[in-house]
Length: 310
Image (cartoon, rainbow, N blue to C red):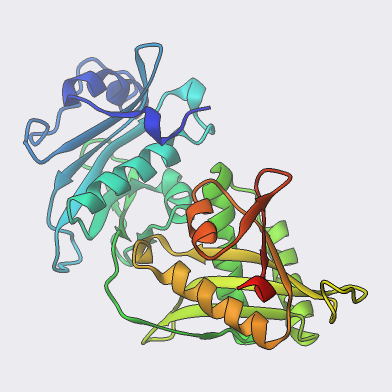
């Protein structure tokens, strides 16, 4: 399975063939070079299989049409070979690109997105610029200007969620699920998620800590479903919790927000006399949970925290 470690920085010329094949109908008379291809600050990425470029994208320093301040890059020529589409390669390449661009201090990226691809961009956190619809001068196909914030410095505050936050919690959960397997699973499970949150909030069986911007936008969450079992010597009240929906919007990551939310969630559970906290962790989340005292159990991605031992 392709992962971000198989995304390589390459010279722009090695991408021209795929650019032409996928984006220009394989027309040999059409230019697929950007004047900025050779710039030292340009970033060209490719997914390579058996020495063949199967997905690519190029990024250039460029002022965003929105006129916002901060270092901005433009995305061009994002393409995946026809027989490798719907395999998540575009998402993997974009995630690798965003990591590299964040390390350069880039705060946002923008692109002229083909209207046929807007669903992909929106699923991966891009926003459409209202009123920016236009025809590409190169292809005469409908395009829309799209932007994505890579790093948002706005301060956040922490607190418990309420039923009014359910739409934001479902959105964060959808982003988390998409990041796991890079698959769009449709809307039905999200409707079921809304019902789940409504049901458990109504019964006071859910504790959710969130981070909000000053404007009230929920940008991160951690939820715990309360569960009760027959009391035992090791759990006199019989109270336990299962943690889920630990999710942060990409632009707010790497700020310690998830750690702070989890600490506050654990304290909320302690107040409710919860003795045992369980969760399932991705490899990326293991360091966070280990730092909080969770220990691995069988199966390998299951972790448990006993609050009475802290």
